[in-house]
Amino acid sequence: MTKNSSEFKNPPLYLYNSLTRKKEEFKAFHPPNVSMYMCGPTVYDNLQIGNMRTYVLADVLRRILEFNGYKVRHVMNITDVGHLSGDNLGDSSQGEDRLERGAKREGQTAWDIAKKYEESFKEDAKKLQLQVDEYPRATDHIKEQIKLIEELEKNGYTYKISDGIYFDTSKFEQYGAPGDLDQIKEGARVEPNPEKKNPSDFALWKFSKEGKRDMEWNSPWGIGFPGWSIECSAMSMKCLTDAFAEGFNPSKFSTLDIHVGGEDLKQTHHPNEVAQSEGATGKKFVNYWVHGTFLLVDGGRMGKSLGNAYNMADIEEKGFYAKDLRYLFYTAHYKTPLNFTWDALEGAKKSLARLRKECPNVSERNRGNPKKGSPYLMNFFSAINDDLNMPRALAVVWELMENSSVEDSEKAILLSEFDKVLALDIYANEKESLEETSIPIESLPKDVRQKIADREDFRKQKKFAEADGIRKQIEDLGYQIKDTKDGVMVKRSN
Image 1: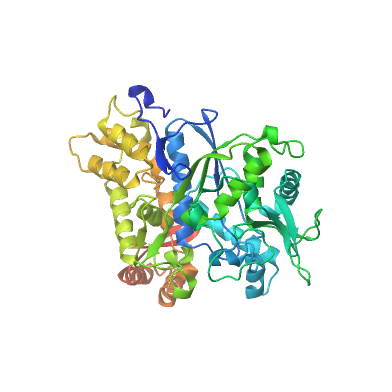
Image 2: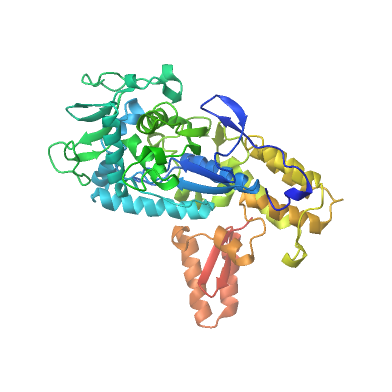
């Protein structure tokens, strides 16, 4: 339990489990340890903010588990091969590899594309303050994926057709969980593969076509690359259990506590993971499945063709920052569609700025544990432990802020505790706060960049009056500048 739990009994933690389709009390398989796997990004382009909502969901869940006293190992995979474009059309075993497509788009190799966008994603993750223990790559675990396919082959779950090795879903009686079986089918917009035994069968290993791919490997079945779903089974087993300690040993596999992902993965990718994992080990794969709901934009879907597939760079270009986005995500429950608008993000930014401005300025030495039986701590616990009810948790924060009868020292202690879950840097020091909200100079409007350069010239000439005049012009344009030992930092005026 959290360090303050001796003061009162924590309410139990409940999660909505997609596997059972009901809210259940969370019970770790091997308490106090918790294993958690998150389906991570396919690194062929910059990640959209819709993806970020799901990654923040996993991070909040981890923080809430830790707030309840658990020790969490959180693994998020990096998909850098095998994710085919056909998944959007209903069949993840068809289409073009997204990394290969990205390579053609930018005139680079698939390896270059993977490295570029993995680094971009990790920069975004750092800004959002995501806590992940390991980021395994699919291309670093080809050996484990092959061993898993060999085990499935030995157990009679596979067959071979002209384009690869497939999993026979008719051999796995429970196929469909944690999705809805009646919705798992080949999409109407993709031509069904006539060689497949069943429409829901999926590729475990794809053969390379004529013409060498950037990414391909030797295997017992021929040169090719792994299917999309097999990577998550192999890497979750490798990073969270002892299944691959010596070759592949199903008896060493231990059921995972939690698997997190977006709701779009519930109909094919996650049922595939369950089928191949349980087909290989004979054991339950995951106890709790947690799925986040889509992010809408201006009331509709997000998509590149619509010009609204915003990424972190788009957010920053308009003067917003990762923590503003994180605050916005908290304004709706993770199972509720959240409508992104620039006005909504502006509202989140102003709320966070107000919270930081109005929080009591109490030194670290005056902080301690919340008072025994603090109703605010109990209410915050009740909110976060009720299936991660972050809107209610935010409401508790503001109720505390607006209660003048609570001493500033107690408010400071409670806000510091709450921020262990919120990760909004409520009490960030000046340097952290400045770096969090600073705007890269190269992304500023041209006229602002020129004024910053002119001001620097005046400062070098010791013409400080002229430099101060330009500072005022910059402030009139809506920006604040601060001179640091690392150079000029710029942020938007609140």
